Amino acid sequence: MSMLLKDALYNYSTRLKPKPLQFSDDGQDRSFFSRRSLTNVFSPTIKHFSFDGSGGLPFGRRSPSPRGHSTESLASNESFDLDWDQKALLELSDSVRASLRKDNAVGPEAERLSSFLEAVLKDEERKQPTLDFEAIEFARLDKLLAELLAFAEMVKVASFTADLPLRFRVDVSHAKSLQRIWRRRFREQFFMMDQHRCAILVKGGRLKDVSFNNSLTYDVSKWETKMSDPISELEGNLQYEAGHWWLNITCAERDGIVGSSLEMPTKGRYGSTTLPLLTGWEELIRTNTVKYIREGRSSDMHIALISQVGRQIRILRGYRLKSIFAPQAGVRYDGLFTIKQYGCKLDDKTNTYRLELTMERVPDQKSFDEIRGVPKPSQLDDWNLYEKLEGDKIKILQGDSNYLEWKLTRQEDKVDREEWRRVCAFRASFSWQGGPPL
Image 1 (cartoon, rainbow, N blue to C red):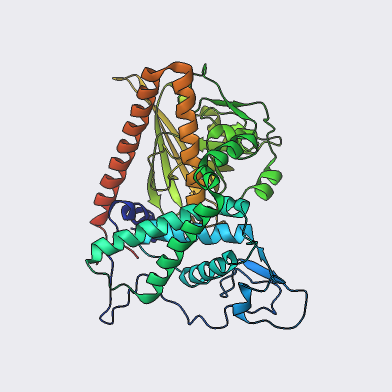
Image 2 (cartoon, rainbow, N blue to C red):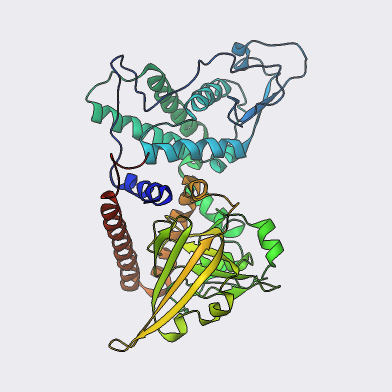
């Protein structure tokens, strides 16, 4: 079995069985931390702290004087201003939350997380803290604190001891203090953050220029957009790289990478074809080669793809696709694939057609290892808001009975997909030598 399949299956298997927590004889939890000494983390003379893995922090400092100041002056000297990098804060938040969910560990950003918590607490001691509500909301720092504290409680119960690593206990203490400070500082704003995020999602965020249409009967999406402008092959390759993510296929149509919200191949302005794989299932043939299979009517067989054999097309994968490569939620652009073979046959007994499409991923793109973490935790936050919003609209427009039916159907689909993944992982486990891949 290829390493690609092993990694993909293991990625899903970790959702089903969390890794055990491991402590060494000296009381240090090796799964939490593997970091260098926190020396010279704060340097007031540095204009900007990098976020490239060199140990920098997601903020810079502006000083009116070239003279150096001590670290302790951060809390008391109002001449200092911290220049917070919101995107870097979001990267830190996503990285830590993803590690907590997947690996039961703080992850590679443990040192940066500790330094960040210390810096924010000192900043909160100022008369006018520089980390504002917008930055906290954008970077999902409220959810970072909540998940860190929930993880600490889980570790405490699982280990049956309060003797946790000192650095971890300090981080948890800082997180508790910071959560308490922000609740007191922002009051109801802090507790209404998700409602505000939902409003942003609709007005200028991921759901911009798309609307819910109750009359649509297409089960893949009940959303529509009037902002469709198919993009060329050159534009698509420049604008979208593997890992780009949308809430639904209609959002992808709005941005022009597909020409329709239907599950069918569409062409861009200069003939570039995009195929969304939203239903059906996939089988891994060999490294970078998959077979996509779907059953249905003759109109569902993507006959237009016969002319695309040997050519490159863009592939989008949706969360309902039964595949080890499918995203956890939404729709993700997985890059360019070459169609190697097209096959279609009719089952006379059931009068059902079966499509088999063999595709090979084009080299020199982002690997699956790089994109399998998409959607990130912050994107899953938006997905949860989107699902709640869609459910509320169905409840208002169609009534409670239709809402309950919609909710039950989605839950059944989720259980069905998870069962498929469990079976797939179980079958693949017989090919693993010495346990699952790491």
